[in-house]
Structure formats: structure tokens, C-alpha cells
Length: 357
Image (cartoon, rainbow, N blue to C red; front, side):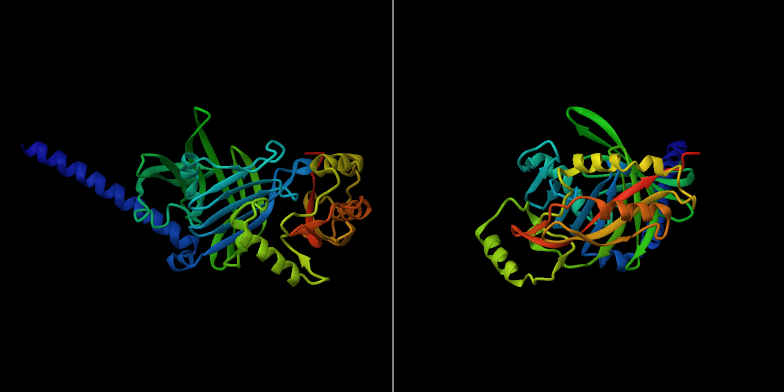
């Protein structure tokens, strides 16, 4: 009997220490991320950046409203997107689907965790999760604390939290897709403070690599983003007429409904960048500055490109080449707001690696 009691006490001690260690690690993560007050204050977030590199680079924007909206737009022509709300969702895969498709209810339910901007670790117990500390492992070349998070349905996700910075460096999750179970590994790096909260600017995952040049918190979100632009209701139509009346002649849109695009879209851009012999520039670089140069410019209502400027790598040989390529290119297809051509900002990137590496 004495041995049994000691064994029970031993097991209870392990459980208590395990739970306490998980909470301590998660609390350190919350504090490093900005603290409870700052995280609770996040109501919306907007991220702007790209996916891929070079001619395969695609622009991406992410708009989220806590508990209400998660929208991802892929490509400057806005032809690919995923929209998730508490009740409905829509998806259009760029280059594959001719029309917008509504996300099935069962699939939508598995995607609605994306409505949580701050993620499941923050207030995990209140969100119905169980957390357990699973020891220390190496993540992205550094020691990390491994936290296993389990939801009410038994689905598990492994979080790797840097032992020094206490920020999340990696997430591993098993998902069901087309009848198979696939592990999705996501790596987070290059954190940046925005409004007192730390956000990763670089995300590498099994499904693609992303980088973000612009992150905004708690900015107003247009209600029309809650549904695809090709789904119009009478109330939307009245809002459209009102919006048209408020558009000034010299207005420059940062996010129009349909963004400006290169002639013939991405295939046309790929042919153009190939024709300007970007690769040969690698041998002509004199300042040894390689990387990705992002150029921002305005496309007017007639498709003319003006006000081009390098957002990154300013003054480098690559930036000079990129600005010249944008200036000498053909007219663009102008952006549209409520079906009307408008002036709008657009961006393109030019990537170049050192040929000697």
C-alpha cells in the first residue's frame, strides 16, 4: 500500500510540474510578445509582402479582424484569395478556378482558428486547449522549449519557443488533406515590434515562404473585404455609388478593389523580366549589394507608371536597375474601384543572388 501511495504521489508530482512548466513558458512567451494588455488590444491587423523570389515572386496581403475576418489576397490582380468569417468562407485559387467558390461548412470549421489574430497559445485554457511541456529541442539552430497544444477535438500542434527570446520559432501541425495526413512545418523569424507587439516578418513553411514589408495594427477595415468583390448585394451597390461620389480626381488608392496589373498578368511579367536579362546584371554589379529590391510606384488611370521609388536597397546598383526596368516597361492595366479606373500604388520586386556564392 505504501508503494502504491508513493507511486500516485510521484505521478501527481510529474503532472503538476509538467503543467506548471508549460504555463511558465507560455507566460514568458506572452510577455516577450508584448504582454497581455497589448495582445488584448489587437482588434485588426494588415500585412503586406510577398511569396517566393525573383520572377516567381507574388504579392500577398493579409487582413484580419479579431474573431470576425481573415482574408488573404494573392497577386496584384486580386484573382486569388481566401476569405474566412464566422459564418461563411470563400476561396479562389489563382489560375485554377474561374469563379469564386464557397468553402464547405465542414472545411470552414477547421479554418476558423485563423480568425484568432494572437493565436491559440494566448489564453489557451479559455479557448479550450490543453498545454503540456515536452522538453527542450533544437529549432532553427537554437534551443527551444516544446509545447504540445491539444484542442477539444484531440487535434495537436507543437510549438517551439526560443529559450532565450521566448518567441515562437516553429510550429508543427498534422492536417488532413485529400484523404492523407500531412505535417505542416512553419518557421518564424525576423521579428519586428509594431504597436508594442512582436510580429515575424519572415515565415517559411511547407506550403511556401513569405516575407512582409508592411505591418499595421488596429487600422480601419473596409466592410466590403468581408466578402468577394464579385458577390454584390443591394446594400453593397448603394455603398458603391456613395464611394464613387467620394473619390476625388487626384485620389491615389493603396488598396483598390482590383489592383493594377502588368499586361497579360504574371506570365507577361515573367517574360518581361526575362527579356531585361536580370541574370546578366549579377556579373555587372560593382557595389556587391545583392538581395531583393522592392520598387513602389503609381499606376494612373491610363496605365502610365509614375513616382517610382525603391523601398529596399536604396541607392544600390540593383535598385537603379529595377527603377530603370519599371520606367522603361509598357503601360500597365490600371486599378479599378467600383468598376472605375483609378490611380493606385503598386509594387514589384527584383531579386539577385551573388553568382560567386
